[in-house]
Amino acid sequence: MDKINYDGRVAIVTGAGQGIGRTYALELAARGAKVVVNDLGGARDGAGSDPSAADKVVEEITAAGGTAVANHDSVATMAGGKNIVQTALDAYGKVDILINNAGILRDKSFLKMSEEEWDTVIGVHLKGAFCVTQPAVKVMKENNYGRVVFTASVSGLYGNFGQTNYGAAKMGLIGIMNSLKQEVSKYNIKVNTIAPTAWSRMTSDIFPPEFEEKMNPRFNEPMVLYLCSEENSVTGNIFAMGAGWYGRSAVVSGDGVCLGDAKRPISVEEIRDNIEKISDLENAKPHDSALSIFGYMEPLLS
Ligand code: NAI
Image (cartoon, rainbow, N blue to C red; front, top):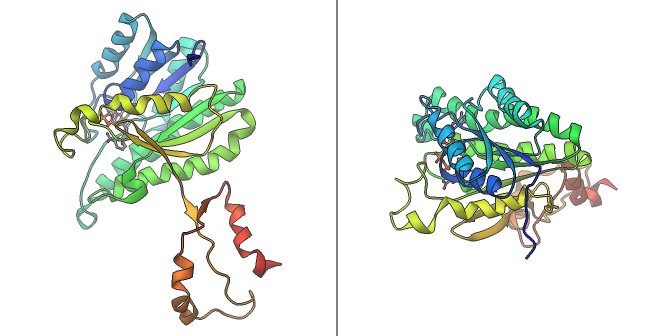
């Protein structure tokens, strides 16, 4: 089997001080990448900071013969994002791979959620991805090469009690990806999103104890490393995974139904009488661009 390697590649992994991000950093370095290990080192809810989180992973990588440098900035500000990218430029001169992985939780049912709980979670996951990805993509564009991974969640794709803030942020990342993939495809930059599942600090009090070994964070790593490899040809896709299962998820649209003639008004009763056809997902498929949705309206538009 030809081994995939990252020789000569420079990778940034955010939130790589523990959990799933740590497994990406270790394996990228083991396969030849020079790695920026970013981690603020805060608590699960994002409070506080501790530089030892990133430093320990850098020590682990260098002890194993790999190359890595630590960065302790928060992803949640533009200054932090720029400095994370600058750390890669200062140490290794470029950025080829960015894995947006840093994350926190502030779960609360929707009616009890405070503005601060909303803003903090959106700030780390959604704004944080913008703050790191924009400066990183600027560098990737110059080098005509890049691999970007966003970390969503099945909470965003399908919902989870108490996670309206987290789910909104995670689904928002898919919104960033959908447009960004179009803007950067001409620069050989591929952008994908994953929805991982793993036993970690984030989930250890949510999952049953018997999941600890089977839901090892390392099972997410091969899919993400593939998406970050030169061999990866896909862009704009969503992959869900956990415990060794890997599958594509997608936003899809059904065939729907054309009513009227694009001239006469449509009544609410016509919607009621066609709701089954409107809701049918039998031939549902994903689309590469917002423009392709016009295809469904073709009979009305021509
Ligand atoms: P974790 O809590 O073990 O690791 C997250 C890391 O991100 C921590 O080391 C933390 O210090 C760091 N971090 C938090 N805020 C930061 C900031 N502002 N700047 C820089 N670093 C920051 O969590 P885990 O499970 O490894 O999660 C990794 C990613 O995967 C997160 O984005 C999470 O939302 C996502 N995810 C995890 C799932 C799971 O089952 N564990 C499920 C779905 C998504």
